[in-house]
Image (cartoon, rainbow, N blue to C red; front, side, top):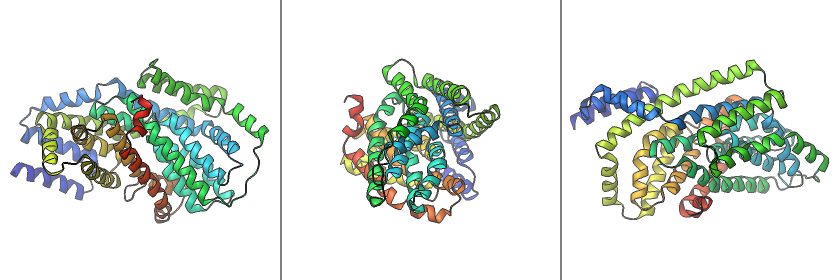
Length: 421
């Protein structure tokens, strides 16, 4: 009891001192290993090594590099041109084109922030020029950017799969249901809000030109995801192919990228990995010791003593995840909570893939839910708008995202249909 209070005091002190999550988690794990589990230091190092000694971790930096290459090059611009040409005859068509562009780029990037920045840098000024309100445009881009972690390939799904030993390929398949549902919801909202805007007939010449110039952008997700789902290559191999394909297209076909740009991309990727990989490694060690101590099983027993209904349990879990997503970054929430909540979901009868999908769909709301709200913070810098105004702009879109979460949770078929289950 005394040891537990000391640990809690240390964690609270570090939080009050505004130390980052990596240091806080590292100190907590070291304390648990040394004073609570009576473990040797070499076991701590061994647990960390076992966590990072996984081939699939290599896919994370490669997907980040591929996404940044496409954002700096012209693949994103060519993709948006195709979507805009397809939707000119629909009221709110440019808003719908923005949603479709975000969904299309999500299928090749794996990152919410990269997706929002790549498409937003092109579509935000275009939306304003076409007469769309600033509030609508910002809300659409910030919320639509979260498609980057629902529609595969998804970095968050990769981390979830590593922390829970759930099939990453199955998570990728399951993500299509909620991803398409959110794409449809945002498109319908765009149509409803902007239904009085003028339209014009589809320009077949412009559409043909856009398709010809953007063929490489369209083929990329087909090649990558088709290869994964057909079993021709693994998630890691698909990430390597994504980098090679993006570099080939941007350097030699579109010729939009310079060697200096690629160097900057690598530096930015290293900075991101400097916060991501240590977090995963330390959390892996914590999960090992908690599992050895029987903490997940004890949590299941405790919950079953108070919550009998599986839907009541799911409500509790979703509220917890919503709070976690709003108060901490989503990768941190995954590495800390997923290993504890996953056994709980399975014990209450949820399909492991379905429960993982619910977790991902829930946490993606945290990207636009203050105070952390990574997408909103990035949008404030990229689009040069006030944080408070951006927060207000996403409110109706959060409602759509909560609806998608509800449907995903209540109807497993939304996710599992893509697995043939």
